[in-house]
Amino acid sequence: MSFKLTKVQFFIMLFFIETGVVYISFQQALIIKGGRDAWIMFAVATIIAFIQLLFYEKYYKRFELGKITSWLYILYWLTLIIGFLGYMQYTLNTWVIQSTPPIVTLVIMLLVSLYISLSRPSTVINLGVLIIPFVIIFIIFILLATHELKFSNILPIGDSTVPQWLSGVHSSVLAFIGIESYLILRKYVLENEKVAGKPLLIFHLIVSIFMGASVIGTEFYYALKEINLVPEPIIYILKSQKVTFVKRLDIFFIYIWLAWSILTINLFIFNIRIVLFSKKRKHPNLMMIILHCFILVVTLFLVDVYQVNFIRKYLGYLYYPFTIVLPVIIILKNKRRDSKCDKSQ
Image (cartoon, rainbow, N blue to C red; front, top):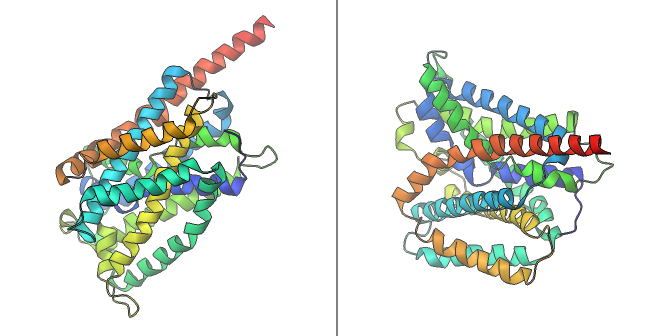
């Protein structure tokens, strides 16, 4: 694949990768496990994520995937895609289209995804620009609930135990799942574009504040005992808001979240395309069609509430091997290999 990214395009793609499907789903588990200190735990997780980004920025040129590691990452992204689609379908069944067979909506979503995947790289690269205004609208209407916030809900702070801290920080990392895409996309940024330093810090602050505000807002809106009963707290907050132009604000924004999430799915597929087609292959379009058929068949078995809860419980554990362990191993291995080549010369 041949394409180039500007700094802005690069950061917009990363923004939607990190904030897509998980935006309405990670707050409940974090607050249940972390208690009133959940927002502090999330802040710690953002610092850890920023350290990862600094490491990525310094060594991204040495992140060269071999055959085995390429397929490991492809399988990892497929797992994320299938898990996310299962959750998206479950959310639609719960809030919007209870009587529509899952295969109908999944086929529609994957046909959209297939169309984007068969198009030029510029299609998926520029889609984020179209969705940004809807994200801004989303934020504005979330702010309508500020008069219902109770700041005493986070008090007292500092009484969480060590196990709560470990569980809370672990639950927070789900907000940054997909961060390894930095290593895949960074090489395609134009050489004259500066990413390190202030631009990277500003980008991470935007993502962290955007996701962190949802955690703090959820804690302010719900008492600690209430959160156990609210699986998608952001959607419930929207449902409680009354506006004149639409009867159900929550459903209106579920469709916005759906478009936002489909973009996230396509960005993971874009990662797969980059890795899979780094070498010229026969019939690339046929491979994309087969890939989407595989995703559809597997996802159909994961739209039940029990499978969705299982995915939400264990998906975060994939964060550690694929965003920390494997990148470190690959970079160190390639660094050692490059050092040996320099000595031999």
